[in-house]
Image (cartoon, rainbow, N blue to C red; front, side, top):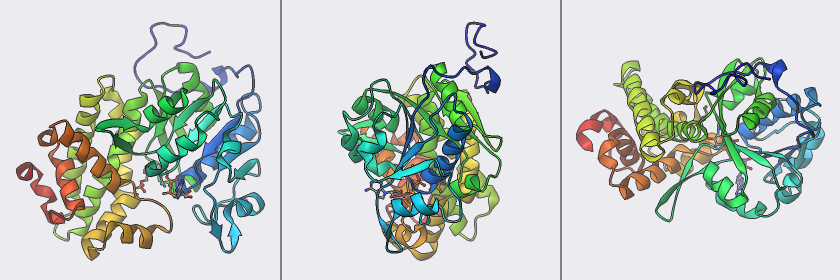
Length: 371
Ligand SMILES: NC(=O)c1ccc[n+]([C@@H]2O[C@H](COP(=O)([O-])OP(=O)(O)OC[C@H]3O[C@@H](n4cnc5c(N)ncnc54)[C@H](O)[C@@H]3O)[C@@H](O)[C@H]2O)c1
Ligand SMILES: O=P(O)(O)OC[C@H](O)CO
């Protein structure tokens, strides 16, 4: 079935399956996407196209839960189901007609065997509460949500929250994937973290395309932590871009130190996380793209120039899309403070202090002295 599958032990290194050798499931998988923002919709396009192309694996119809809102005087779900476009969050991209928008989250997840979680991380707890007990037995999930939570003085990953609340297996997908570029079909890579190889292979089939190049790794948490923490580093990159006296060398230093602190954080709190994961798209790849082309970087640069509040910047710059880095910076600060580990993460600490207005953006380069 897979070139390594018969030769035990399985390799620890990341790999790409040989497509023709992946066996279809006994019963078609029924796929539901939860979340229809910028990335939620770009992903839905890929997934729905792949489901239509692979009937031996997936049911043709794919549901997408939409947090309902009125756009141009009409319900967004109605627009998506008639014009086949998410005019608010991914304008200008035709969506496949087998993608069905549903405003009712319980009906959207009903009977689904594969659930794709893809919305801003601040809404995870509420969304899980809404679907607790409503998900089919044996369903599996994948999280594309970039963020961590600090709940009752404990750090919790989104994959852990999903698995605890719903009692199902959870994988992760993160990578250098600016949604608008993915939707345009620009070539890129991404990383899926799996626990069970069979699930990893089915998910590879669900997401991989010639231009959306998926590699799978046996490291759910490592992949997820990369995606969550890179948003803090992206803020640091934006601060650099906003300070006129800093150039490319300065930003490269912030990116390098940021990647090292991401790895240190992951391996301090989760001993299973593999070093190789940081060399995948979810690690070094995403650090590069996010520090040049992401929303967190852009909003941090605007902060330096305007000193407006983060909420105002988000509202003015993102048209309903959400910033993840500011919340993550605060959550990670709380996690590190609670563990008495701030001194080992001077860049994360410095970025937090700039985010809070306690340091000036140009002080980012003094991270070694400040913390
Ligand atoms: N946009 C990108 O380029 C990109 C790429 C890769 C990963 N990501 C990550 O993917 C995740 C989803 O990002 P996105 O770009 O799809 O979202 P987004 O930033 O476009 O957020 C807007 C979405 O949030 C929804 N929303 C607003 N209020 C809500 C509520 N109370 N409850 C539930 N949903 C609500 C909106 O309806 C909309 O669908 C994030 O963690 C992000 O970091 C984004
Ligand atoms: O626009 P950002 O800053 O949320 O980043 C987008 C993606 O995460 C890049 O992979």
